[in-house]
Image (cartoon, rainbow, N blue to C red; front, top):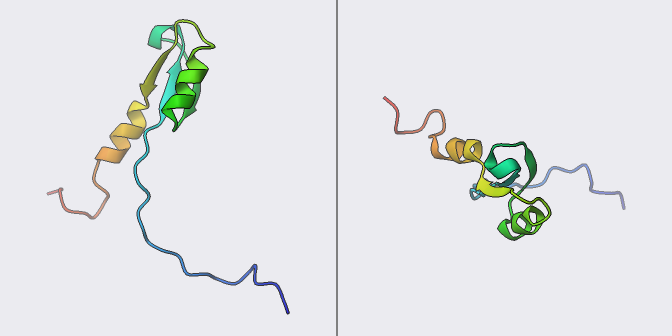
Length: 76
């Protein structure tokens, strides 16, 4: 019997839930991003290795998640 690797399979159209991207920012939040993850616990563990670093959610990801998709209600 042949392999079924190249067969098309049914896919669901379930939306992916929004996830917050946490960033570890150096120099009290004014420096470069040292690390980013979706896990707050991992971000906290990594920030301990960088004195003076801050953890904040990625503002670009938050802004992208709040805007309505093109062609949906909420526009003009």
